[in-house]
Amino acid sequence: MAGDYTRADGSYTDNLIGTLLAIFGNVLVSISLSIQKYSHVTLAGTKDPRAFYYTKTWWFGFILTCLGEAANFVSYAFAPIALIAPLNAVSVLTSSILGLIFLREKSKPKEFAKQYGLSFLGCVLTIGGTYLFVTFGPNSHEKLQAENIVKHIVGWPVLLYLLLEIITFSLLLYFYKQANANYLVVILLLVALLGSVTVITVKAVSGMLVLSMEGTMQLGYPIFYVMFVSMVATVIFQASFLSQACKLHDSSLIASVSYILSTSFAIVAGAIFYLEFIHEDVLHICMFLLGCAVCFVGVFAITKNRKRTKTFEPYVTMDMTKGVPTIHDKGLVVQPDYNGSFSYGALVNNDGVAAATVIPAYQEPLTVTARSTAASHRLADMKRD
Image (cartoon, rainbow, N blue to C red; front, side, top):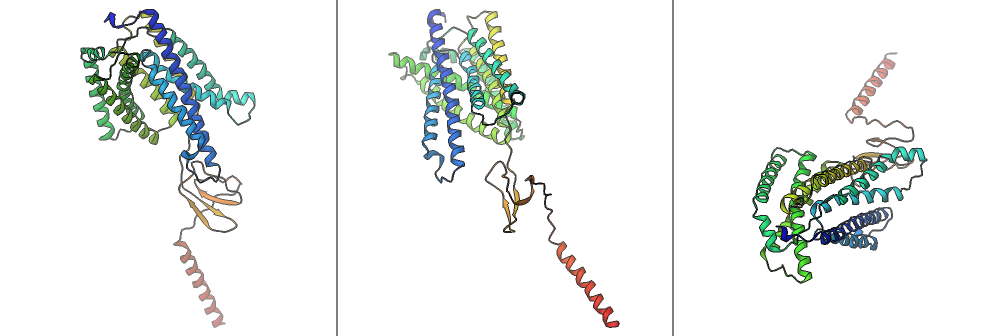
């Protein structure tokens, strides 16, 4: 297998290209998502009846997203999976920095440090961990020709790894579907197992495409299409499981746990399938793992400090001028504050007026009956006098 790997100087150059492409792609994706979110918020704050996909801002963000994902895709052709997968922390880091820069709230330095100190610490840890695993990451780089990929697949370590992964995935899927185990760890483990297959196929497809562009045609081999179909299928199923997780759990917790699990499984998959650590010494491997661990802590600290979104609860408002109750059962996530009105239910009254109490409908006729009975007794007494 030694002849399948490039020389040391070529590996360093390829690693540098792949690392820069991955960093550029993750930064671009973070910026594009912020632009698209700005488009949604701006459109929601106006009376513009257009859908979001009719705005130029949203399309500009979408184009940036495609460019960023393309850069991430190509980066796998130049650098090992163990070096590219942890760089997804750059996306979390960039989003946190953009949030701090464009923060509209004006607060005192002490209050700002108290509120965002954990995020700042997470950014520092993420930068330090990224430096460590990039510096001590694997340097071996293999030219991914179709013959080499087939040799990797039929090797007993890969077959054993795939067998264990299939068994684990089947058990988790059984508990998730049949036993209703909707735990976050279970769902994200399913995503991570699929993600390990995704990075293997992405690296194979990207590597063969780059070689084909360089003049060594690889598109005529069946293994290319097998890898391509596997890549698309695993990406679709990952998106489905992540969508289900977002409906059941907090998005900030999903971001950190998913990053940790997916990165860990991707590193293991690259080490087994592409033998990425075969030429590395123990010290470099330990420093690489230390950098990943520090980066995990940093990402967890960044996402831990994010505000959790409030789930919508139906509520009722009573307009003081019209005197008509209005039931709000859909629409906004955060319940609005109406001036000149009182409310009850999930909406908190902010003007000092106590929440109204609903009188059951069946009590009214009982009250009227009691009053009519008392009036008839009074009439009888007057007749007697």
